[in-house]
Length: 358
Image (cartoon, rainbow, N blue to C red; front, side):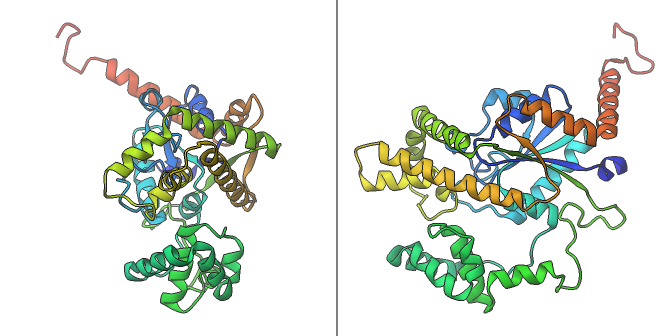
């Protein structure tokens, strides 16, 4: 286990529609991996089509972790992801296999790699007040308010990014300090020193976990946009609206919940509320929101200077990723393959003192 911990932990990251899942499945044909999903939407049960969740056949072929673990009425946080991911990584390694973290929720990836920023906790009463104000004034108005008190944070958020605008205002109103100042103080080590890696907290004698970031990025943004448009139309054809209608019919969900603010679901919910007869406005809104998501994801990725970039538009993207893993994790892959073969032999070998016919 010590050798596994000293080896880099591989993360396969990329924007939506970059083919992360297909590359991961191709890698699983060559390597003894289990996939730990880094996706803030795929954690929710009953949200399959709009999250591009891997199907039953894929999940039967390759173990996937952190999918379908939360009800849509509940929240899921970066802190909980770090705890869940660390547990899954430890279990995978205990089985002698390789964990591969795959996804596009960059906040979760950063929380795992860099540790969690010591931000003020949630204030349910304050959140409800901000949601009520947003229903009256609209999130763009609250974004303008945020720009007055925390222009640095407001500059990186879209005016309709409800969840992040709400959190930034919550932090400012509860602490009197803008979120950007909290984050800057953490980066400067103002809390008493550098933050430990979230993956190594609680391991006093263990070496710090190292990470290998592989980023699937498009060499031509226009081609990624075409993929996004085709995928969202395919989701509509596959029954995304029926899925959202079923979620609405539960009666305990609302458009303000984090699950229903996921891209695709938010636009479908608003379209159903509006009573629009034509489907094209929904498709246009969904494609535009997904493109904005991809833009934010690429911005996060480009802030990772040590990432290894693989063009997601190449036909041999999976082979390129495999070569990077083979080069950088050669020793660990060799040990894991030997351990897997040994376990297979041990399962087939008769127990001492038994006979083959027993």
